[in-house]
Length: 88
Image (cartoon, rainbow, N blue to C red; front, side, top):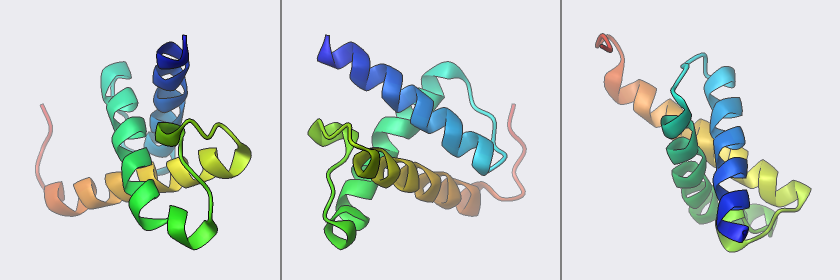
């Protein structure tokens, strides 16, 4: 059951990050962005704020914020490397 919640929350975080970055993704990509962005947030943001991420089973408000910031950072990195390229 925890795995399903992890996927749903990861998808919501990925969807929110894609809306903020104005880079619409599909459902599977939203889940991937949410989970990978959460890992990135765990490495970069978590030590600064002292909160876990959804990958560490921290479903608190701070854990969700750290995961969301990580997902936005991930999309910013992707935008940097794919700027000017068309998506099919």
